[in-house]
Image (cartoon, rainbow, N blue to C red):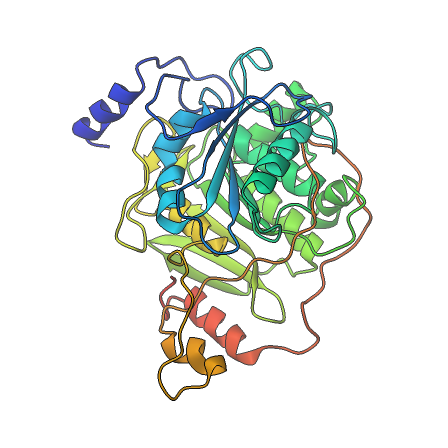
Length: 402
């Protein structure tokens, strides 16, 4: 990164500490649009709640839960990854839980502690309470609740997806780990160093045991730097295997292509809806990839573990969640055109992002266990040929993503 950008980032973050564990930025007093809520319900994990709700929300407003990495706080990660800017631009609500040093000296979410990763317990339950509070206060569409996170926050995001698959429609894991591969600090460090050798069915079973969920599983987007020496890139492969098994999809990617110069693999269902995608960020170390977004805007600021990579992970993740349409206004069909044809006539390439699957809700916390064995089912018995072709062309780079 340039000296100018480095100085600008450090100006906002005056207190940089040594990196420990699954790390990122040291907590600091950062100018932020986030607002703290002290009363949101039960808080067995003793976490803090920060959120941002733009003045203009989209119709059927969505909620994105963003989990910071070790050494970071909500404000510093929001500054670096640019989520509140995206929320304002596209009209969705933002929830950013924050760890406290009293719970973890390095302010990591305790993704490896069974007391924090079981449904209804610890940090997972606290995050679920926050989701319920903000969703009720702002009439969030229950089918449009998503979660993402970096590093320890990414691992905690898999916890939330596994323990509350009825709450989240989709998730995105950046430099994180699969759910359930560690039950203590020693196992966590081992998983970080070498990844998991468990098979796809074994990894899937860890999630199935985490709740009694019997419906469709959340969609998932996985991001990892190929040169990550903090969390082994093999963990990205393991996360993908875990969720391919849950969705009943083959291990071989259905399509491979480069997006902004980085390899992306895609798996979809019979309707052509992307259920699993994976980005390997070439030669990138541990952190969140930053770059120019598809709308020619930049979200976030470079810094420690926030890395210029020529691709905006925050924007692409928001697009994967189906959030990058402008704040929607009622559509009026052109004169002489039937109302049911209005969307078709006004639609141009690039094609709209996937619509998220309906989600069923619960809360999550550190890796827990309890889930009935159930594989995701396609939305319909027939195949939507047009959509499958469109998704294949997009994944192959022959049609630009939104």
